[in-house]
Length: 203
Image (cartoon, rainbow, N blue to C red; front, side, top):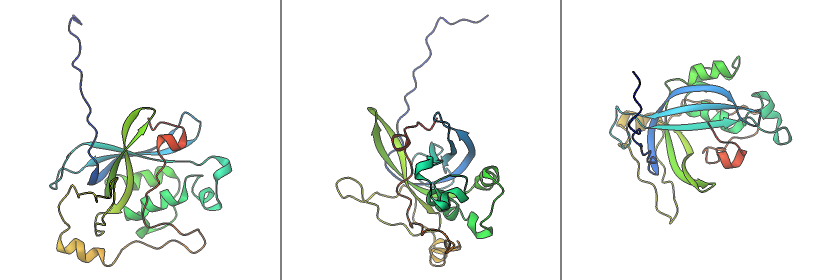
């Protein structure tokens, strides 16, 4: 017997506060957008094995294919995705240390699962709704920069300071530099496409 005499409880989904978090990639897959392009859709989970706020909360990160008029030669080498964004993701996760050629996006997704990174969360308003936006990606062994927010106040890290071994590792990056045949890649990934930028919502 199915009894629907009681209304379901209304759950409130508070935003993950602005700040820095250590996360791991729980899911990565290639999915179509409503505009007919593809996106690399990544689900991040805030780690619960270190001391930080919002443990086990979920964040989302998307890297989109570019529209034809915006494509560069470098973008075409990686399935029409934003080359700089994709390169930086593979860089901070350490995947580029083992090679720079991959069969397809499924190959990349398989390698991304379980990788740990640091992210910076900001809030943005789109169509009257406030949502989380990931503005920075860093390797877990990188030293922590001061990241300004509105009002000029730096963000306070949500996790503990790196250990001595992590700090030592940060002095000798293990990732490969960009190949000389492609455009230079910025060291910080502060311009990931948001739903507003691509005219497309992530899910």
